Image (cartoon, rainbow, N blue to C red):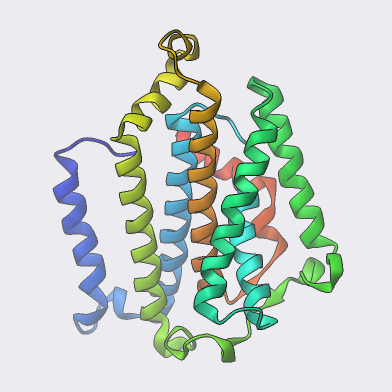
Amino acid sequence: MLRLKYSRPLLGVLLFVLAIAPLLGENPLSRPGLQQTLAVAFIYGGLALTYDLLFGFTGLLSFGHAFFFASGIYLTCIFINHEVFPWYLAMVAAIFVTAILAALIGAASLRTKGITFAMVTLAFGEAGHVIVNRNFFGLTGGEYGIALNADLVPQFWIGVINTKYLYWTSLFALIVVYLVIWWVTDSSAGRVFAALRDNEQRVQVLGLNPQRFKLLSFVIAGTLAGFLGVVMLLASGSAAPRFAEASLTIALLLTVIS
């Protein structure tokens, strides 16, 4: 994660240019195809930031992070399609449920350490993939996934002509995730996260509870992944098992360590 203070003004300028580019007449960023591609890239970029908080910053090697991303996608789609909530409440509910799942899975997984922790998170992640792939309770569509009912969401997110709104939504989501993680890592809790990565025993000597801070990092990362899943549903228009695959988490791991 980029942390040099002098790079942040440049990052701000870049984000500003990306934001206004679709309004500047004929240019590559005014084309729906590139806007769609970049919207997805922004989402995956934000997802990599959430994994960086978990692994790069706190030192927690999880192979189940895609579970929370898929949770945001599937829960939002199910809540909207079955009219459990209006679209805006469905999004909030999906993020809230994902946060609860992150807390429960984190609490169970963090009873272990090291490679055992990684394997436990992999097991939870694979369980999630099996659930969506086998169409439990007829809700997830199995291997074909489920399409979002476009009639139940605002129409400015629907259609090729409105791709720029998906682009801006995804860029906004990336900015939100970056700012939240920036705030967390610059806080006192963030300094404990970094200390846990470097020397957990030292944290214990200081009288702090490592498990609580690990769980906090796990829940924040999982909740933000769920938030990005909500945005991915809008960008992709459907929920599919590929979003829950362990290979996605491995791709995030490679992104963080590269």
